[in-house]
Image (tube, rainbow, N blue to C red; front, side, top):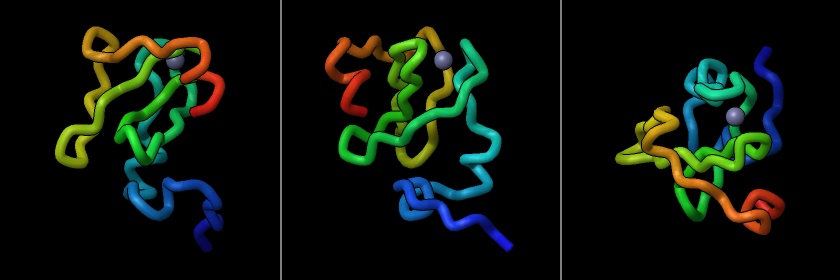
Length: 73
Ligand SMILES: [Zn+2]
């Protein structure tokens, strides 16, 4: 039985995709920011863009978050 995800993941991302997606820098879990369409790593303060539903998991392409963004994501 699948766990009942209470986050946005279950609604707008493929759960299988969620399982394999980690931050390429710290290997930690990512948070999907549904309005910005970004995958956020709080520890690294990086936001990975999601283009056409495909996450761009490249640290070089990631956007650096401000302190407030990292806090509210
Ligand atoms: Zn990270």
